[in-house]
Length: 163
Image (cartoon, rainbow, N blue to C red):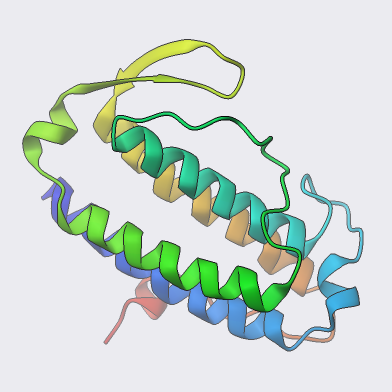
C-alpha cells in the first residue's frame, strides 16, 4: 500500500507542478523574480529550490552523492528552461516511484546532508519527506501567487489527482 501511495504522490506532483507552472507562466519575469517575504525570496527562487531538493533526494535514493550547490541555488535563470527541466524531473520522479520496492523502502538510507553530516534514516520516512517537501514549497508559491494578479490554482490532492 505504501508503494501505491508514493506512486499516487508522484503523479500528484507532476499534475500539481503543471498547474502551478501554468499559473506562473502568466506572470512577467519581473513578477516571478520580485522579492517577497518568503524563505527563497521569490516565486522563481522557490521553484528553483524545489528542483534543487528533488535532485538531491533522487541522487541520495540512487545511492550516490552530489556536491551541495546551496539550497538557494538558482539552477535556471530563465523560466522556460526551468519549466522544461521541471517536466523532465517529474518524469524521473514518476519513474522512481514506479520502481519502488518493499525491500528498498524497508532498508535504512545512509547519506551525507548539506552540512556534511553523515546520517542514516528510514527510507520510507525519507521518501515521504521528499514528497512533503515539494508540497510545502508549492504552498509557499501558491501564497506568493495570491500576492499577484494571477489567481493561484487549486492544488488540493483530491481535486488534482481526480480523473
